[in-house]
Length: 300
Image (cartoon, rainbow, N blue to C red; front, side, top):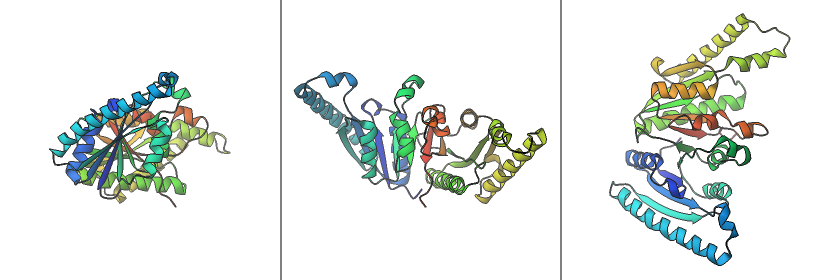
């Protein structure tokens, strides 16, 4: 992550008074970055039954109200010494139009209030937050809560069980973004790894070597050694290293609460098939921690 010079907040109309706005304002104040706040909204399912004249009146009313509210919010933030611009746009299909908007808008970090969607709804419709996690062309910061507007503890969540080139590159990118973000916030840097034994069992179960407790201990020891070396190489103090065993989403979220971490930086990949329904670790952790920053593998 380069120096934060331009922050972009993407908000839905009912999320303008949210921890994400306070996080964005604190980051802008600490780094001197400019702040752009964009509100996107559109018709609910029931509005499609209205005729075009009434729908246009609804649209015009929405834009007028949001612009007035944003002008007031902008004045408040300007009074705090923050350089700010605001914008409102009407989106018939927010999941698509927000992504298109991000492709044409330069920013060092996109900040958005996280919205919790029920699991049943996620079975049929991919939430906007998940769409952004999977496809945002820019680093994405999703904020559910913010005890500290300016983060004090930032954690890099890495997965060293992947030894392929993409996995290794993603771990390096996660640590790099975490370190840069922590430095700009004046925050502690932590590194976290959650290792689930059952995944290793399935990886070896079809192999020619029988699964034994000794083999499990050896594999765990190897991963712990790799984790320790990785943390040392990047200058992470011993007391800020957290090697954990258990299901990643549950274990990482538990560590976040126990260590009072403000931000978790996680990798995200485009998923297919069943993973689209179950969600990645980042998607599952999203609803259980105060905030995450999602990064994608660096382009090769």
